[in-house]
Length: 128
Image (cartoon, rainbow, N blue to C red; front, side, top):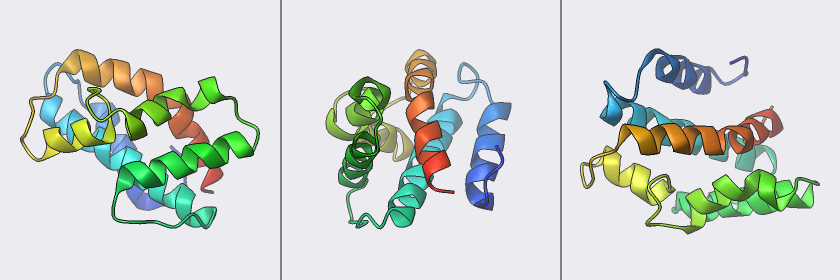
């Protein structure tokens, strides 16, 4: 990943080295951190207020992406991450895995990453 933010670059680099089947907690943690960092960077670039709840910031970011011409289906996985708190790949579920409230499953992490990849790329590209 080539991005001016070195933290985001390091997070992505480290996640790429890990296999969710072998390190589900680490992959969950890094997935959550990448989603958070990309969301905050995009929000700051677009002057979207950053509050205390990441899911509301992500929801505002996805709304902005749609305003900028992205189709709803392109940001659907990000909307699910923001709005569906009981989905295995939501901000809340990834956070629960970080704090030990749930055990992350490798299959959920893989599907979540693949589903969110396009939306994450839009956030990352829009934050540069």
